[in-house]
Amino acid sequence: MKTLMIPLVAIFFGACATMQPRSPAVSILVDLDPASVDRTIIVESITANKEGRLYMPDRVTGNILRVDPKSPKPVVVGRIEAREIKGKKVNAEGGGIAFNQQGDLFIASGPFAEVLRIRAADLNAKPGTAQTFATGTEGANGIVFDKQGNLFVSGGRSGVVYRVGANGGAAQPAVKIELHTRKLPDGKTEQATVANGLDFDAKGILYVADTARGAIWKIEMQPDGKGSKPVLFAQSPLLEGVDGTAFDANGKLWATVNERNAIVTVTPDGTVQEIAKNGSAGPLEFPSAIVFVGNSAYITNYDTPRRDNMDATGQAAKDGIGASIAQITP
Image (cartoon, rainbow, N blue to C red; front, side, top):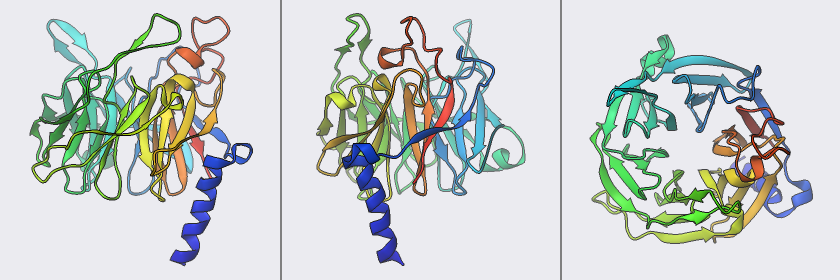
């Protein structure tokens, strides 16, 4: 059975990458804010548990939402409480999200410069409240666990990727991507996020999405937890706005390219190929993160009105569905 299944999967994903007319269709799994496209719900990241249920943080309310793809009705299973910082109420603005092997859920918070945790028991029994797990993660954005249970956290504009041990505590810098700023085609907006989405391949090599350069770096990790010098894995105009990343079962890297409303793949030799792209009407609307459940890919629509996600007025992107989960299925 193993020798039969692998070619079938390879045929599907290979066709996605090389035969544009036969590329898989992207559709909406669930509209997370059916009453509005005014960004009253904002989801930037997504993960899945071992049972294939999807989880994402809402940056507006602080709620952690769960969606079962088989019955896609959002359920609140956790919450990140706002804090008072320097006399002002500050939302966590949940970023990267991931499970560890024990089933605890972790969420990055840039405004808090922390990674928060909700225990597995609290997710299952009642909506759990997130508690501090790691500190000192300035600009905390993407997160991913290695096979040893260490947590890696991207620092956005700082370029730092932090490492946190399995027991949490103060984060330590593991590697840094050189700073860079790119001016967008409007001639005004500047993009300076050089450490964004993170993922490990099967060999334990870390890949870092560089949104500012339209590039992806790969980094070999050393026994002491430090990263070797970043090596450019891929760079292309097709990657301008690269955000979240995830490897499929065949070792091909998939990426959401938010500025272009696009999904691309990157082959092991660094070849970038476009899978799907559309205008502001969707179903991709500033896609920000991707996760695989089996052979199906699920994508969060962050829906920021920028570049290709602008409607005819050029002021917003209200001709689409808004905050939602898109899907690509075999």
